[in-house]
Length: 285
Image 1 (cartoon, rainbow, N blue to C red):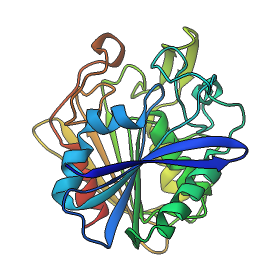
Image 2 (image 1 turned 180 degrees about the vertical axis):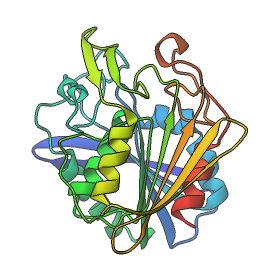
Image 3 (image 1 turned 120 degrees about the vertical axis):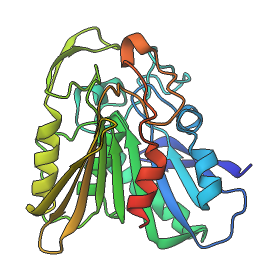
């Protein structure tokens, strides 16, 4: 198996953490894939759930899995009790440390990894699940170290987020049967606060990100017989690629992962696509 180490950094007077994993047959320079967990998740759980460790060994990828913040940083994280979250600007971010600058933290982490001379600086990519997907959109908009490509999965972009003329190739994967991110928008009951939260439709995130990339120049839609709809767009003055993959019957899970989130909460998992393969083929293609 690959070699995993724990990173500790101080950012904004707070100790922050991440896992850094080199692939089994590491030979530099490798590409770096940053993976952001969802609300209530951890780096270690996300690595196991998505099976990105096995995939990274196959593809010779260095993985960086940062940890968000939680209300009580003196206690360990739990999914429902003391959940770990990212400040993506959504209501979920209030469960962590108020006003924490996660953009600055991620920039600092990337600086740290670059200083280790482990990776190819021209191949830094970012993906995230759920709340981590929202943070991926935010970092791509506001971060100093612009990723060479991003892959948000099962999450939404903050609708007041202001970004324009970005040149970041993007693959965005969503389930059409996600009870926590309703495809057409609407109210959900938060599993953490038990309060109603209104979620915008997935189409709003797609439209906002198209605009952030400079607007759509061309769009080609294909739909397979397996209930997977793929749309490829070219956006902005540099024809930046933006692909969306919409999966029928997929709930709030990483497609092709273990699917261990509670089905009553998250709906059904799906292996109609293997998210890691789809993401890497797009980002590193």
